[in-house]
Amino acid sequence: MPMPDPDALIDALLPFSGIPMDPAWRPAVAANLRVAAAIAKALQDFPLPDAVEPAPVFEPGR
Image 1 (cartoon, helix red, strand yellow):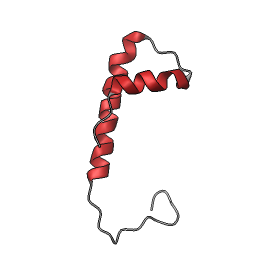
Image 2 (tube, helix red, strand yellow):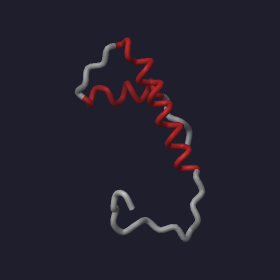
Image 3 (cartoon, helix red, strand yellow):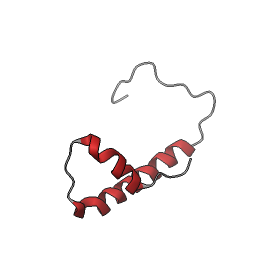
Image 4 (cartoon, one colour):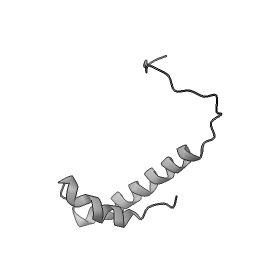
């Protein structure tokens, strides 16, 4: 899947967020979206063996 265009995401989602955004913040928001996309890609590309199963109950600290 190609990396989404951060500016297109901002334009599409900002009206629905209800959060006003100063235009000066746009480059920083776009940069954060690029970082989030790179992290998501790394997670999606990480190979997991077929035998791996999710835990039935999440127990923090275990």
